[in-house]
Amino acid sequence: MDMPKLTLGNNMMERLLEIALAALLMATLFHAIRLERALGVLKRDRGALETLVSSFNESTAQAELGIERLRSASEGAGRQIARQIETGAALRQDLAFLIERGDTMADRLDRLVRGARVALEGHVSAIEPTEPPQRLRSQAERDLVKALKLVR
Image (cartoon, rainbow, N blue to C red):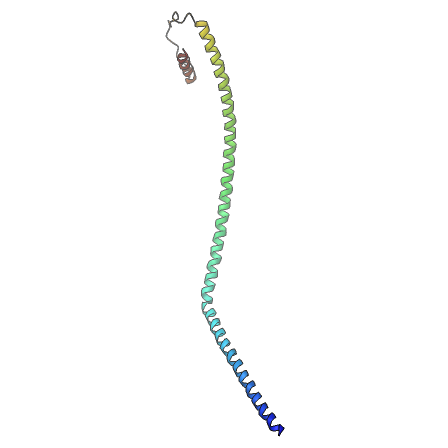
């Protein structure tokens, strides 16, 4: 009597295993169908993806070329600015020298004018030009005469 129970239990166990196996096969089939659809979408979009990658590569190459052009332009501008700075420094030195000479000349002219004032203190009204003034040779001489007239 024990035997028939075992066969009934084995039979039931076999059916449960078959049902479980069928359920697992259904789940596998479901996932296989989803995977096949996803692969189909990838295959269809592969051409678009290749075009996109190609376009991206071209854009990258153009960007690299643009960066190289920008780099060379900035180096050229840097060299030009360096030359202008050197020229500016030389001009600054020249201007400093001219200002120093101008200050020296102005001091000397001031001393001469003061000395001439002291010497002419009583004789200003007696001195009248009898000859017409000579023709001036340069703008600097005309400016000097003008400055001397303003000092009186």
